[in-house]
Structures are given as structure tokens and as C-alpha cells.
Image 1 (cartoon, rainbow, N blue to C red):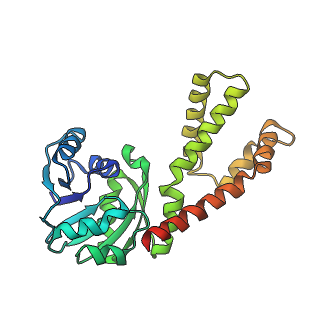
Image 2: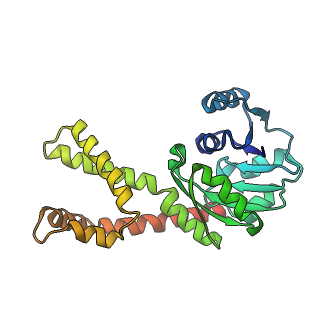
Image 3: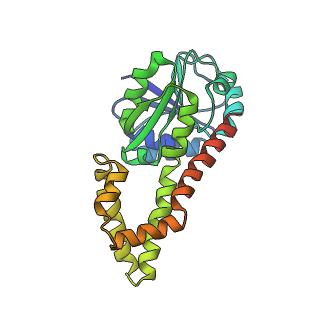
Length: 254
């Protein structure tokens, strides 16, 4: 089996490693051996573990999953030149990655939190020679979409990468609304989870506008609730959220 070298042992790295175990040999590089041991325990299989200082990446397939602000520091401690670098760092450009980490090829990837359950939508861009390999790699944690520019992946980051937090806010607010009207919180939570589960399947087949229209009867309950959302500028707030997150992603790349 091919070996994948994880540099960084955080939650996203662990989520991806869970999807890859049994399909790849996994080795993990980090600063703290105790944390590397904890990573191995959570992963549930024996892996090779190395400390970051002076680690040689020569001809390795690297999956970089450190914090964006740590790229320069991490790069200073690595030796050699990687075969390919797959980076899951939000907003961190290929130019910046190559500046600090020596590699023959670079691919940016943006999975989201659903990677933990194998249901991520991971957007990809970078060296086309590794497009197929990138898709195979990240299909282990969900679906993939190759994009043609870094601008597009930064926009996709604002949508899919940050999206679970937006939807969590909506979910929590809907539950609070039901509780306010008198539904027990436990029952409200169960109802909300069922709503999101069913909606996730429906949205795969039906355009959002058609889905909305199909449940909005004239003068009905949905129309009343939808009107309240429009009065609260929920649509505009969602559009603004994507813009704000996209601008932040660009700042991280500077």
C-alpha cells in the first residue's frame, strides 16, 4: 500500500486518517509524542510516528494539516523535497506553501467537518498531474470536486468548509424557536435532526427554489414562517456570511 505522511495531528487530520486506514500506510509527524500516541489510539491502528524536528520529506506524499499560521515554522524544520504536498489549510495559497515547504507538486484541498463521518464535500485545486490521485485520496472521506482556480476554492471554503457552522446556528435557532412555543427541548432536537436528515436527501434531487415552493401553500404556516425569515434578512445574512468568510480566506493567504 502507498504511504501517506500526515504533518499535523489535529482533528481534521484524524478525520481523514480514519477514512484512509486500511487503504494506505499512515505515518504521522508532530511536535509532541504524547499527542501522536493519542492520535494513534483514536485511529485504532498501529502507525509510524515521528517528531517534526529535522523530519525528511524527500519523495514522500505529504498531507499537511497544521494551522495556517504555522506553515513557516513547520517548513523550517523539514528536510528534503516532497513528491507531492496535499494541503487542507484554509486560505493558504500554493505560492505560500511552496515558499515554505519544498515539494515537486502541490494540491490544495478543503474538506469539511463531515469528513469525520465520511460525508465531506472536498474541493480541490492545484497541479493537474495529481488530480486523479487527489480525488482518490479524498474520496475516502466523502465526495470531491476539482476546481480550476484558487479563487474558486477560497469561495468554496466559505461555503462548504465553514458551512457546517452556519447550518448548526440555524439548527440551534430552530430548536430554540420550537422550545419558545412550548415544545420540549428533547422533542425539538429529535424533530430538528429528522428535518435535517430528510432535507439532506431532498436537496440532492430538488433545486432549493422548487423545494421551497413545494411546501409553501398560499396563506399557510410555511408562508408565514418564511415571511418572518425574510423580514429578519436571513437570506442577506447568509450571502454576507459567504462574503465575509471568503475575504478572511484571502487574508490568510497573504
